[in-house]
Length: 254
Ligand SMILES: [Zn+2]
Image (cartoon, rainbow, N blue to C red; front, side, top):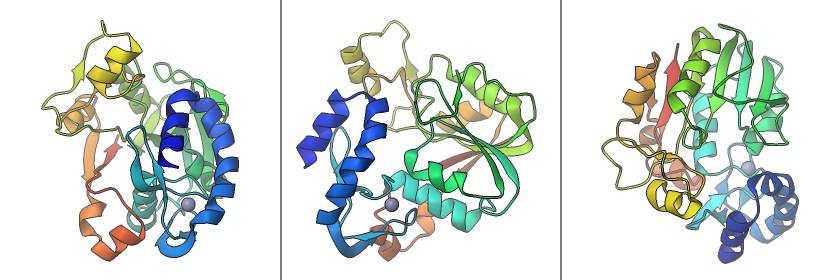
């Protein structure tokens, strides 16, 4: 299973993966019946989660809603630490994660807009360097695992800041590779996918973020809040929900 998933992640374009993987996984879920782990996003219980990732991690992917460790942590954060599920808000969800989409869509308090440059799942086709919304018009942005792919992340950040209302906030997660670099590394002359994988950790990444990620966010004018919910949870909860070991949630506020 591990190798099969790893193979598909490498060979099948992401947009097709997103469309068809959940159907296949419904079938797989039958073999993961059990009670040891629980997905807070879809509230299903399993024997364990599926392995996932190019360098496969065990106990990672929810077979029912496709939430990964980081999605389960963000969900818990939203539930426990924010008014996300009750406060009226206009939300822009960039490169929307499939595990969140239909649940956010169903929330009556949200005016929910999905956007992406290529994903067929999103309603608005959008280049994040040029967000097609007015200044001060959005309350919440989710833009996870996007900035490491875009040509000019500082421009993307300034666009997000422009469209957010004063007091509006965003969740901006990016992948980190350990040991963490001191400063973010980018080199626009590296364009070959194999070279990019070597330099930036994945063949479609254009930079590798380092310890300065929070500072980089702040330099675009945001107030940065590094939320460490993971440190507040008990070991029992961490293993029940199979959460990431040290994920900081990067929340920025305009
Ligand atoms: Zn789930």
